[in-house]
Image (cartoon, rainbow, N blue to C red; front, side, top):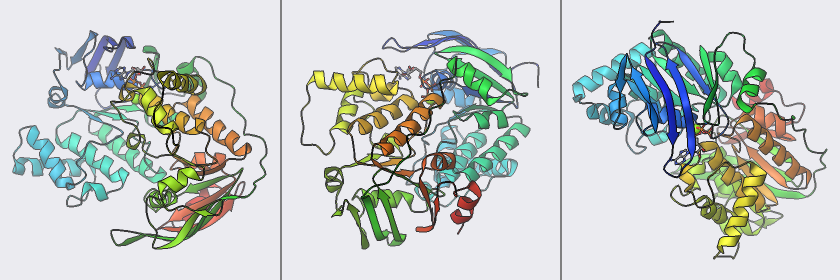
Length: 492
Ligand SMILES: Nc1ncnc2c1ncn2[C@@H]1O[C@H](COP(=O)(O)OP(=O)(O)OP(=O)(O)O)[C@@H](O)[C@H]1O
Ligand SMILES: [Mg+2]
């Protein structure tokens, strides 16, 4: 490791305008060619620290030193020009444009003409060993490929520091491995990577050093030599909570959700090719599979958002033809992408109330009711927020997820469709939400769990079906469902 850091953040504090103290006197160094992981519970300040380095927000106090010079950014473009780039979990690409157009727009903002930009992109692809389909429309690409486009964008723009904020939350296991190879390659090119994640195995696998934040302060910065996941977890939370046991043994009851021979076309392409499944009261049916194999369409059809050309969706024997039917018959949904359901500028209380009262006749709420709902989510889901009136967009990612999960679960659906329910949640809250799904099933709720996280599916499900190419390629009972068997069915 080089002796002088490429980036040095010294005594960084951040108090947001609404008084939230997000960081306190944080020191953070980044050496050339190192992978430095940032760990911490939801709301610990990880994203805030990196948004400061990326010039998106200003620190309340403290200094940033890049290559021995103190810098003061007036916006991200200053940071980008100095070689610092950030890739968010929600990519900042124009979906209706092609990959090449996206790259050229970014590079032209850096003052490159088309010819220069093209040769930069080619060079970066070569150096990174990355193939991306330049003529494809971004909106048509899987998440893993979009992420490669973001990385390519950063590197062709001359990034020496790449910040990845929860880069694996929407990736499949294979895509995660591919990302790790790219990170190795970046290291060998001397690029420094800041890696934010909640997954401890990723941290021990790819980091050189690890910094742990707790409530805005650094608790430790350590080398990744032999540190265990347990130690890291303890550093993050202070002490470890009891491991929640699985809910009581369950006895499945009546069929709650029945999907019969569902065929769905999207833009003339057959995305569901005759899918059938049943979820009974009191059981969790897991749907595993590589993202993009029909899971999204299946969920949309169950909600009545996509009309099938053949087949039907029934809740307790009654057909679902619209979201209204779905809610009226007792359905509930935790969507895979929380940004689709939350209105960032609206308050936490309004968002919670909106989700909580979806499908009910109620239209107006008293401030007292909103406040009570907020309290309940806060207490039961360990929500960290300044109050019911704060805009939801100002909460940390994990706390936004708690608003979505909390409001929907408190609504008390009899069938819950949960898509990636723990994405962005820290270890303790993930454990809590998994325990909650399990408890709901024990109380008789039917749960359809669609998750890209295979560990999650295997841990929670009573039965697992695997989707591939718009079909269900197999069903495995709990105990019989191993990662290997699921893997075979994923490719079937
Ligand atoms: N724009 C903002 N305005 C006010 N408060 C904010 C804003 N952004 C973040 N915060 C608050 O600052 C604290 C740190 O948030 P941050 O997003 O940095 O956490 P994080 O460690 O990235 O968490 P997560 O794992 O949930 O993504 C939280 O209490 C959050 O509510
Ligand atoms: Mg964050």
